[in-house]
Picture 1 (cartoon, rainbow, N blue to C red):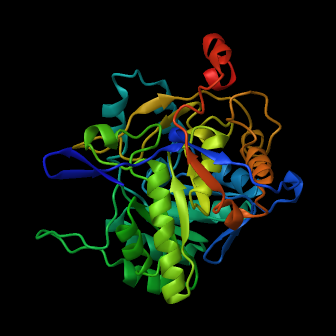
Picture 2: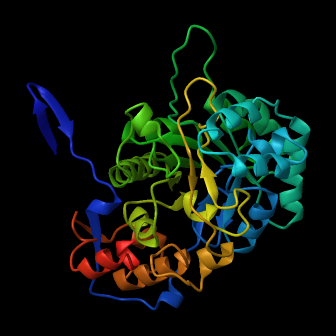
Length: 388
């Protein structure tokens, strides 16, 4: 539905996670018997959770542990892991930096050239640990880095930027040919492209041959794009629209392209809402940055923060709360929905009568902007549970 925000100027109403709620069905399912597996191209995941390619979240050790838990962690091919032989020393400087110093420090740290041999080494280390190796790169480096990733045996390749489009107009440089990259590497590893938030943009990216599309512009806890650029669409509407593009594309071409909700999910309830909106998997940063294994040691910062001209991120303190396995698979030792994410998803699916992720995408949704505060006056006053 469109509204007029002024004379002859229409604006569409969009919705975020806090504005909707999920409605139980006539049937319930044993949570232990629901199927939470998902696929992105040829890559099969036991749990539908992906760790985002941020230096405060993913290193080799974290990626291996994420794989043991059934998910996959994406390593930033342009982060400290590929710029420095001993990234631990650099990460320590970032963690210890004062708030007023951290932006300039990151800009300096990320000026160090990327070393291609380190990218290959990190992929090999992750594979040796028994986990799927997933690598991300910005569009301008995607063609070269996809070749390196393919040769090193990577399982997933992600082409990611704040806003990604098939058509990019410039008189100073040639635009990236996503179709060429997908055609070249997709037989050996699926390609995921993002980020986008609209039906038309998602459909255009699917037509390049991508196996998955990242959905979300600016909702991440450490991202400031919405404030700096004024750009973004609330996640529920973004996921619903892009999922509609996926379904149309499947019907027309017979190929399924996974929708991956990227960012904005603070609690397990948000994750459940992302799947009900149409997601096939979710990508999480801040929620996993709280893990003991996370290299940021309780700090989390956005991928665009080190930009030397226009930083679009900030370093935030999320704390260290539990082992990665406990955050993903439980048991939870807190009452705020930030641990045992998969367990919560299972219970939600069982409550909603969804046997698998595809059925979860079809559950009834209502608009309920006050649902999280209704009857929660004591929790809010005492800062417990949903009142934190």
